[in-house]
Image (cartoon, rainbow, N blue to C red; front, side, top):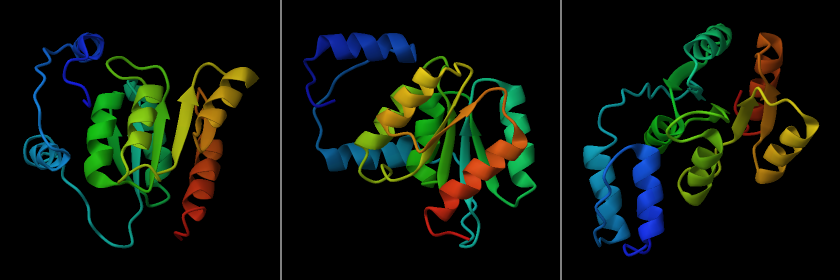
Length: 175
């Protein structure tokens, strides 16, 4: 945090993460080193050069499994997270080609995760597709205006999901 005396932010983080927050002063390099050492070490990564890694973030197992099944058929390597905090952790280490996230989740929702991704200069260019059961035109408009690459309404249609994923990947010049 940029201001260790910001009690409102500490309280908000503590509530959302269900953890006690202890502020400390450290340089950005010290923080990145500590994160890499203690926080990111437990995610196995497939580092083949020709694979396309996708990160699926949703708190509903049925949605994760359905999306994974559709995408694995196309040869994508799939990583899954059950909330935005897990998704952010995996994205920070993995640097996936694309992130597909639900908007409404416990602990950290998709919008909070998206904002955290955008604030991180190393991963702010990863396209993010929003999933939502809120399917109004206004909801879709707001998410796209926020900077999400695309929007998919729930329940997920596998054909629509594949089309949107391929479009996002093509936009990054991957085959």
